[in-house]
Length: 229
Length: 410
Image 1 (cartoon, rainbow over the protein chains, first blue to last red):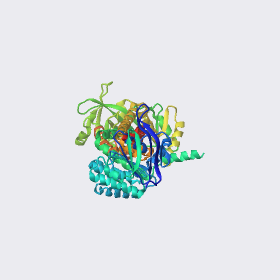
Image 2: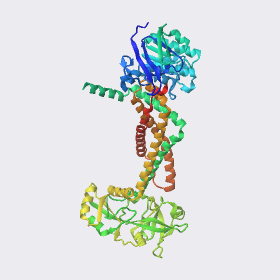
Image 3: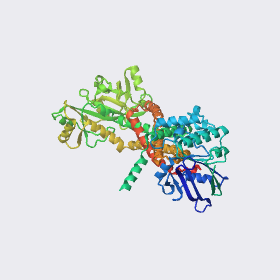
Image 4: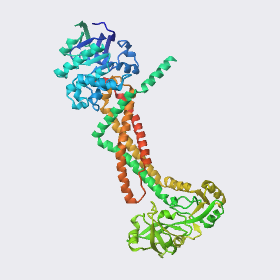
């Protein structure tokens, strides 16, 4: 199963938020390949979210420790970072939808910055995704008119609409009811099957464990050896 | 060299948004601005209020200038001769009538006519207070004014002491027009501080020239009547109006007359004369400066409110912008977003501002009888400048965009 091209490669990555603060991540090494669903577990405060935010280019890393799509993130220019970010999508614990955009417009926002998109294709695909997330009747609603579960499903649709190469998710089902959680997991694993993207999910959700191809455990900033499933 | 080209190409790619992304920026800025206006009507009213202030100030300024040149507009000729110390018709200067007659010697001149101007103190016919109006004296056989434009009947002015009163004058002289319509004539008297004599005046009709800011009204009469009231010899005229033969070039003839006439006189075309008067008001009185300042303050108020609203929109949506940035939106997208938002705020504020200005204009016209008119050109000019100021505000607010940081989302 672990035969796809390498999307992300982390080698010997350590991280602290500021020079005099404690080390959050110690000597992390991992790879994410096409078609892989890597599940990251660990107690809160162990560094899961920090690792995800570094892979999502939310924070800068030192050169030489992290490559995305064979580009060294630490030495990439701001412009290159923006280009890399267009190939990566992040599902946050909070939905972070744009309040002044409708559900449909929010989903379209996930693809419109990508190079060479077509407006009609974008909207058609966004509509299709919203329907797949059972939100077909809510496309023109504002985020504050939706329930928490519906908001999170819109956010997941937004992260999938642009056909990302790498999907990062920080406890995406934590705030969801059973039905919403099931939908989110099904759509993510479907995206992996059809587009061969790679996924890294931090979670405690057993249903996600079921679809995982690789399981990693993080403890006190250190990664325990990977176990295939 | 290749590196340089790459740098240049990448810079250009960063600067240009795809049409889809540009459209998205407009949609997002429009919807954010709409939501913001709904939540913060006061700030929006501030933007519109600033525009109202600009329109009202410019309207007053223009009305003032126009009222000052109303008399100029009906001079019956193409060239004007005045004394060289002349600055404004509010403060008449004189020169010898013979010099005007000399102008008749020029082959292109058809006729010349003198105009007499003098402030005349009269008593309010109702409460007897002393008020000053501008007396305009003309030769009835050779009127220096296009009297048909004044809807005035000159025939009755041949008898000394008869005047035509200004229908558009302010009511400070008493209800002259009302009484004129009822009785056919109205008796007025002059009021002189220096002489115990009061000249009787009989109002036998009306005209519609309108007053200025200095003189609330005017009275049209024969040159003989005016000079007898003011004590100014008929020989001293205030403005000489030169009518040219058809096809004559006014500018050329004015230059030739200037050489022909003795020192101490100025010959100029009518448009130059109008400009001279407007320049007097804008440069030599505080009025031009005050209205310019008022308009400037209006623009500043609009600009500051636009900046404030922009600032709030950016601050409130920092997390949302950070999400977009985490999805690889280029920095130029946010710059376009802020400029669009500022422009939309300005454009949205213009219609209500024009509506309010229109009402203010109507009130002012009723109160002052000045010609205030909300012209399309003024609305377009002020609208354009407001958008320019909005863009400037956006440029200042752009600095806030450095605070967009995806790390804040974690």
